[in-house]
Length: 149
Image (cartoon, rainbow, N blue to C red):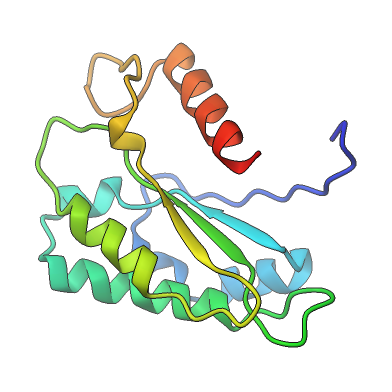
């Protein structure tokens, strides 16, 4: 806000990657016309024990959808995308497949996709071992901001 950069947030508690391909996302992207999209999905998908191939397909589908969005002052389509990977979790998930799918699955004419490896951060976690504490979320947000800066 202080820098005059418009910000629009959309969330759905407990959602998975494949739930973000629909009309709601399209309407929100059309309204916001972002130049960068931050995606924080994957944790709930890991608990559904997907195969690496299924996860890569769902990531690819979402990135394809994002790449079709027009970006202001760009003759092509596709905002920059930063996919914020899940923090370290008490279960194993195909984290390498998620990271690889993000880094290789985006063909935005004006933008590119990058993966933020949250699992490498030492975040304070709550008692469930899945969700960070308030201090953990603050550290996570600070690390993401530093990455973007």
